[in-house]
Every structure is written in structure tokens, then in C-alpha cells.
Image (cartoon, rainbow, N blue to C red; front, side):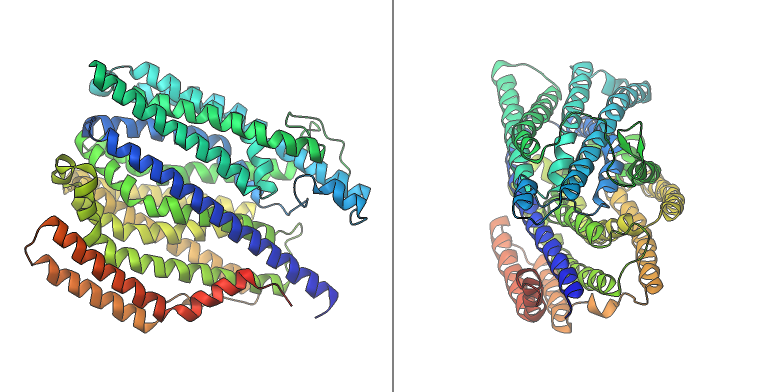
Amino acid sequence: MDATGTASSTKQQSLLEKSAHGATFLIALQIGSRALTFAANQILLRFISPDLLGISTQFEVYLISVLFFARESLRVAIQRQSEVSEGPGEADKSIQDGEKSERKRKLAIEKTQALVNLAYVSICLGIFFAWGLAWAYVRSLRSNPKVLGTLYFKETLQLYAIAAVFELLAEPCFVVVQQKSEYKTRAFAESIGALLRCVVTCASIIFASKTGLDLGVFPFALGQWTYGLSILLCYLWRVSAISAADKFSLLARPIAPSSNETYIMSYFSKPLVTLGASLFVQGVVKHILTEGDVLLISYLASLSAQGIYALASNYGGLVARMVFQPIEESSRNYFGKLLYSTNGQRSSGTISSARDDLHKLLRIYTLMSISAMTVGPTMAPLLLKFVVGSRWASSGAGDVLSKYCYYIPLLAYNGVLEAFVSVVATESQLNRQSLWMLAFSVGFASTGYVFLRLLDLGATGLVYANMANMVFRILWSYNFINSFFRRHNSQLNLGLILPTATTVAAAMGTIAIYYHQSSQEGSDIKNFITTTVIGGSFFILLVLSEHKFLLQCYRSVRTPPT
């Protein structure tokens, strides 16, 4: 292999290792965070009703919407940039070693400062959306006095708005952490925030119960406010050291460009702003689709049904949030840097690497999906009885959670496919995707109306509507990605994504055994033990059947290029 090929291979391997390590950190972070949240929920569910849980979900959607509209498009735009530095404090070291010129050092500082400056756009947008969405939310509730009459409603909404602004004030630090792959810093900040949020929320609930106070959903707001503040302080503490070492400022500073890149008012990278604007339009529609289930059920179902769906989606989505979301984020970062190009030209080796890694990732998702659909529908309702008590288990939440297990694989596939689309699509292609997203949102609303209002399926109907919507989004993304590879004389191969025949047979056999078991009477504990043993046997068979592929994935991350 020549020097150029070796350098390219080394760079790709370095990116893959960083992304794999990043995904590991983020998965560990999500597991720890969700474990804390899970423990907190067990306390909260003993004290709150389905109605209050439904209302708290609406506040959560408000918070997520503010953060999404303010920062998501800019975050994705930033991830499409190439790496510009080795890491915190290493720019100076590289100069001392003679490995980087003074001009490259200045360019690295310039690009980092450009990202920091852009983060302040998110802060300004966040303040606007925090006020605007709060106003729109209150107006939409004029016909629903029960929600508006909830104790401490106004104070709760105000705290959620402040919490959102706190998180956005940490955005300059976050973009630095993301650019330099400082996943340990992110894990530190978010784990501290999650811990304090759980402590404050649970402590206020217990205090209210002991003293006979009715705080409504105010404890959730207190917890979120604490989370936002702690995130801000932790990031400032850790990233300030990086800023001092790498000679850039965490405040917005004018840039004297040392490259050909154009800056708006000497502060903001014009290509990033343009790309961010295109992604924002698409993101609005995508967010409506992502959070549309909560919006739809809030208009078409009772507060009790909203609470049941919130419970099912919280527990059913644990795997998606703990595993799939970190992998999606790391893969978007990896593919964005691997396929970065200023002129649209990419080498055949880079395209092949991206295709092969996407094949592996999708097959891993296939194995996880088979596991979720095989064991989940039987195991989930049993677990629900143990963790939330008989009141919630008898409300129909178990049946909804069982159906949700079939939705999880669709969430996984859609997440990674849309992540890939977001890093390779041009501005015009992103605009075209936005139009398709708009069509999907209309279809989602229509199917939701049929399932919830006409068929009166409640929370279960909403799961069905989500599944139908997600299938169409997956098909669109897959077709787009395949056309991208065909333009580069390559294509996706479905055969490399599918599991072995032995894995499929093991899954079908396990489902048949579960079906037979469901007709047998027995205590909940006996059924749980039996289900666990059967599920464990299936996992062993899956690992044995797929061991060659799993070893290949491990070696591709651990083995250096030759």
C-alpha cells in the first residue's frame, strides 16, 4: 500500500476507533442515566396518577421542542465538518514536535472558534423558542381547563423554560467537546446532571408526601432546572481547561480568517450557517413526526390514555435511548467526518469503507431487533407488574408495552439511516426530504386519527400509527442511501444485513415456545423465571449462530490498519 493509501486507511481506522469508544461512553452514560431515572420512576409512580404523568409528558415535549429547534440543526451541521485538531492541549505539542505548521495551528483555532461562535446562535434561538412555544402551549390549552388548572402550572412552565436556557448556555462547551471527541467530559457532565435531577425530583416528591402538600408536576420542573444548571457548571469547569490549552475563547470572538472560508460579520461560518438553515427546515418537520405521537394523543385521547402511553414509551424506549441513540449519534459523527468533502468528490476507498461499516451497523441492529421482537412482547408485561405495581399493570399499559416492542426495531433502523442521510445529502436534497417528511406527517396524523378516534384503540392505536409512519421513513432513507452509493459505483446489499438462517429458526422456535407458555397457568414469579430461562437460551443460540460476524465487528474496531 502506498503512503497516501496508508494515511487514508489510518485516518479511517482512527475515526472508527474514536466513534466506537464514543459510542461506548455514550451507551454507558445512557445506561447509568436511565438506571437512575428508572429508580426515580419507581418512587414517583407510587405517588402520581396517570393524569399527572400525562401532563408531565406535555412539559417534557415543550422542553425537548425548545432544545431541538434551537440547537439540533446546528449540531448536525457541525458534525459534517472534518477533524481539525488532535485534541485538547495537543496543538501546542504537535508544534513542538514539528508535526504541524503555525498556519495549521491557527486554522485549527479558527475553526474551533467558529463553532463556539455558532453555538451562540443556538442560545439566541433558544430564548426565542422558550418564550414562543410557552405562549403557544398555554393558548392551546384554553379549551382544556383541567390541565391549566393543575397546581403550580405557571411556575412549572417557567422553570422548564429556564432549564432549557441553562442547557443552551452550555452549548459553546458542548460543540468543543463534540469536535474533539471528549466523550469523557460529556459523560461526566450529563451523569452528574442526571443524578442531581433524580435526587431533587424524588426528594421533593417525598417531602410533599410527608407534609401533605400537593405540588402537582412541580417536582419534575425542579429536577429539570437542577439538571440544566449542573450541566452548565460541569461543562464550564471541564472545557475551560481545554480552551486555555488550545488558545480559543468560549465567548463569541471575531475571526480573522487564515483560510478561504467566508464568515458572516467576521463571526459565523457562512457554509455552516447555510447548511444549518437547510437542516432547520427539515428538522421542524422531523421533530413534529418524532414528537407527533405525544401531540396527537394530547388532542385525541384522555389524560389517562396519555399517561399509559407515556409509561409504555418510557419503558419501551429504554433500549432505544440507552443503546440506539448513542450509536446513532456516534455513527453520524463518524460518517460525517469520513465522508467530509468540500467539493463533493470522495475516493472509492472512502465510499467502500462507509458502505461496509453501514452494512455492519445495520446487521447489528437486525440482531438487536430480532432479540427485542422475540423476547420483548412476553417479558415486558411481566416486568411491568413487578416495577410499577398493580394499578398501572391493570390499566392496559402492559399490552401497550408489548406492542411497543415491535416498534423499537423501526426506531433503530430509522435513526441510523436518517443519520447517514443527514451527513451526505446536499442542500437541495435536504429540502426535498423535508417535503417528503411533510407528506409523512400528514399520513401520520391521518392514521392516528383513524386508530385513536374512529377505532378508539387508545395508546395501542398510537403505537400502530407510529409503526406505519416509521416504515415509510425507513423506505425513503434506504432508497436515498442506495442511490447515493450507486452514484459512486457501489450499492447496499440486503443479504449482508440479514441474520443467519439459524438465528431466524431460533427466534421462531422461541416465539412458539412463548406462545405455548402463555396458555399455561402459573404465578407471575414462575412465568417470569420461565420466560427468562427461555430468553437466555435464545440469546446463547444467537451469539453462537452469529459469532463469526460479531468477532469480525470486534476486530474491525480493535485491529490497526496494515
